[in-house]
Length: 115
Image (cartoon, rainbow, N blue to C red; front, side, top):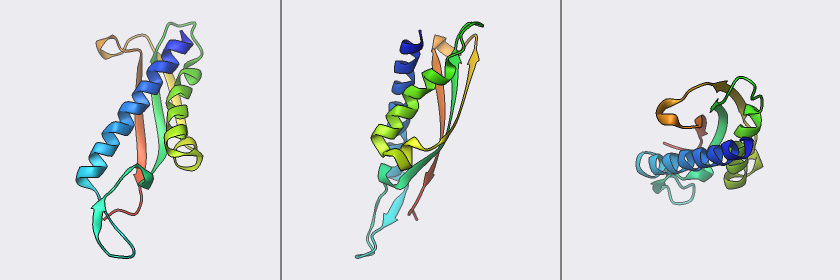
């Protein structure tokens, strides 16, 4: 159903944020303006540029965009309207996805203020 897909897309977005935070904290450093000390980057320094969603669905299902609202809503809530909620987005349907999953979400994010 659309509601189940929405929830799956929410989980995808949470997984993407977790993966991104892990990467930022271990691989990206930012310099503080006052002390010049390098600190690990965090999610406050990213802007979501684009999401691409693939929704497993039958031929008659036409609500892929509503499923993807789940991912967009999580990002908007977690990062704010400007950084997480204002992004380009595409959603398509397919009859199969790997391992039987119902939604796959790709994210492009821009990291600002990093060294």
